[in-house]
Image 1 (cartoon, rainbow, N blue to C red):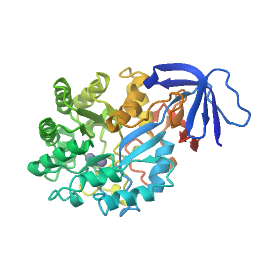
Image 2 (image 1 turned 30 degrees about the horizontal axis):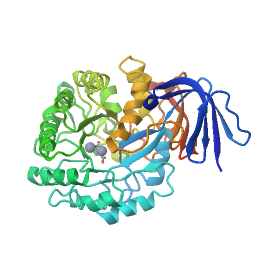
Image 3 (image 1 turned 120 degrees about the vertical axis):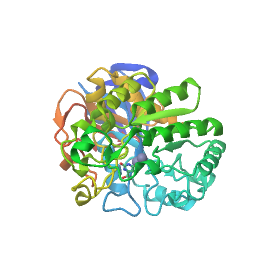
Image 4 (image 1 turned 135 degrees about the vertical axis):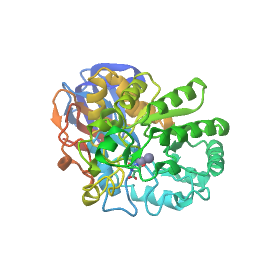
Length: 424
Ligand code: DOR
Ligand code: ZN
Ligand code: ZN
């Protein structure tokens, strides 16, 4: 039997409105007891005095790259990176090679992830091979263990086919994670359309590229009645649309990535691949609107779109580099530094966006540290400033625009299913 006793930590468990110093006793894979003055002579002791203790983070948007692109990331390295970031559950996107688009592929991914240190909940593609021609076996994938559907990396551009997919998603009661991007409007854009793109002589991606598909998807899901989760919202009008959808009582949720609330395009200092991701870093106005949308409860979730790539691939002009930055090892720190320390969110509010609400989107019993719940628990230090250092990442990907950035909110211990999977 494995036993862990976390002593004198400041428990922040918004699902149970707890915000107090106490001890947490974990026995096997469950939270056995929460209280003060707890003692167990056989338990592994974690001294959490001066630290916070929170439910493990749930990242709804991660790219693991296995199978097919193991030089960028593997399930082993990506899940270790998750543990390092305090993330205890991840949803890997299906844009691997082969694409996760069938019962067999979902089962294969789950088998590969069996020994992973964190929970891996697969996302299946909407269409076969993400080719946008024919629907994947949505019901089969759900029954095999897929928790959501996504065409991430692009949108299903054939709206009639997409509509069929949304109806099937509604019948199967599985949420659709929408990457909103009108392919016909993107052209060869590599960064946000605007002054900075002009200055750097780079082709731009306008806000409308995202907004028109966000609107389409919301109205399409209004008709189909499915659960729709808008991935990595980057524009102020995405927030306007999600707010409207909520006012209409639709089953729509919205997600923002740390890079989109931390950095705007005017902070891009040079034409370098580390600043390139999709959707791109937007204007200052968009950044502020996203922070306000998180504050006001319009945006429900913070996920990373952790997108590792090879060093040489990213170490070149944005015209050539692939889209994507890593993020799973510093998402909590960016959330805490950029949203909590600046007053946009309270600490429980941040934990809601990073654990409680993602669990609600998936309708899984996580993000909750009540007695009897599965022990996915994180201890973090909020007091000591440190620098984001890609050399310390467990991910194979080091591609981030945040190297050297000073942040607060370092993960000390990550516990998954009652086992310590990372300890600083
Ligand atoms: O930046 C991105 N990277 N955006 C995407 O939509 C896909 C992802 C990837 O797979 O690299
Ligand atoms: Zn995407
Ligand atoms: Zn993605």
